[in-house]
Length: 564
Image (tube, rainbow, N blue to C red; front, side, top):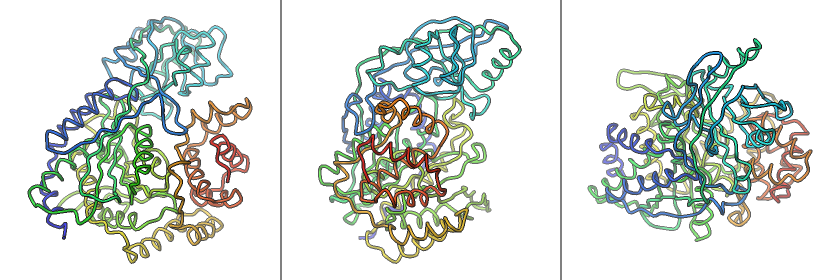
C-alpha cells in the first residue's frame, strides 16, 4: 500500500504556531541530567503525546547504574545563585534571575566572598587562591581548586560570544560528592575579560555571591518512545531533551519537533486509514547518551533490529543569526547503507535548493545544507558504537551554542518543521534493498570524500578504505561488548599518573578525540586489527594523527578493555 496519501496529509498539518507552543512548554524546565526537572520534562513529553492519543512507552533506567563506560551521576537540583563584583566597581555579573546557565550544573551550595585570581592551569594555582576565574571547565580542575582551598570558582568560555553566559557542567559521580564543597558559577567572556584587565593592572577584584542547590541519590533516567507499525525491524527518529531552562536550539528544537511530528503522524493515520506497509517507526526522546545507550542495549537484547536512525539535534535555527549550516552527518564509512542513501536523497531534494549555498527564490527561502563525514557529539554516537547506521541532522557551527543566548528568538519553527517532515518522510518511504540508490550514493560520497581530502595520499587511502570496508561491518555481539567511551571514565580508570596526565592533555587540546574514540571502538570490536586501525582512523578523520596521539588512543582502547 502506498504511503503517499499519508505523507501528503502529514505535510498539510504542519503548523509553526503549534510547534512554538511545544517549544515554550518544554524549554520551561531546567533539564539538567540527574535533576528533578528532567523528570518533570519527561512527564511533559508523555502528557503531550497521550493527550493526542499517542500510545507512549516509558523505559526507566538509573543514573546510579549507567551503561558501559559512562560514569554514575548523582542527583542535583538548582534553586538560585548569583555573583557580584564589589571592588573596584559594583555589578551583578551572573545570576539565575538573568539566566539558568548562571550556576554551573551540579555545583554545590554555599556562600562566598574573596579576591579573584586568574587561573588557567591546575599546575599554577596560587596557594592563597580565594575565588578562581578560569576557562578550564573540567571536573579535574574543579577538584584541584577545591583541594587548594578556593572558596568559589567562576568559569567562562574563551570561544563563546562575548555576552553569552556559558552552559557548563561538572557532572560528578557519587564517589566524588564529598569533595564537592566549592560553589561554581558561569560568567560571560566579556565579564571575565574585564576582571582579567583589572587584575593585570594590579588591582584587587573582590567578588561575593551564593549558590542554592541540593544533591540527592542518583535519579531515574526516563526514555520515552512512541511506536507506529509493527515488525522487528525498526527505523528510529530520535532527540535528546536535556539542557538548561531557556536554551532552545540545543535541543528543545529537536525534541519539540519530534513531539509535534509524532502527534501529527498519529492524527494523519486516523484520517487516511493508511497502513505503514510493514514498516515500524519508533520516535524516541532520551537524556543524551545515558538514555540512548541504555535503550539501544535493551531493545537489541530483546531481539529487535534497527535499520537506521535519524537524530534531530539543533535543527530549527535561523541560520542568518546563528551562522550555521544544516549538516547531514554521516555514520562511519563501514556503516554505509541503503538507509543513509535514501535519507540523503530525501533531504537533498526536499530541503536544499543550491547545495551549500544560501539560495533564495520567489517562493520560499532555502536552508544552507551540507553533507559531512562522521563527527561525534550527539546521540547518533550511541547507535554507531552498536554498528547501527545513524545520521544526525545538526545545525553547526552556532555562535550561540551552549550559552544563555541560545534563546527562542533564534528559532525558526518553519525550518524545524522542514527538517522534521523530511525525517518522517524518509522513515515512511524507506524500503530496504534499494541497491540502485545505494550504488549511486556510494559513488557520490566516495568521490566527495576523496575530493575533500587535503593530500593525494589521503585521497588514495580513503579510496582504499571505501573499497575494502564500505558497508561491510558485521558484528552481532556488539550489544554485549560495546558501550560509549567517555572522558570521565577514561580519566577515572587511567591508573598510571603519567597516562592520566597525557589523556587529560589530549582531551583538552584536540576536538577530534571523541570522534576517534568512537570510531576506533566500532572498528576494533568488529575485528579491524591495530595495523589497519591507524589507516582507517586517518581516512575517517581526514588527517593523519601524530604517532604519539595514535598510541594514546590505543591506550584508551586498553582502558576500555578493547584489543584490536
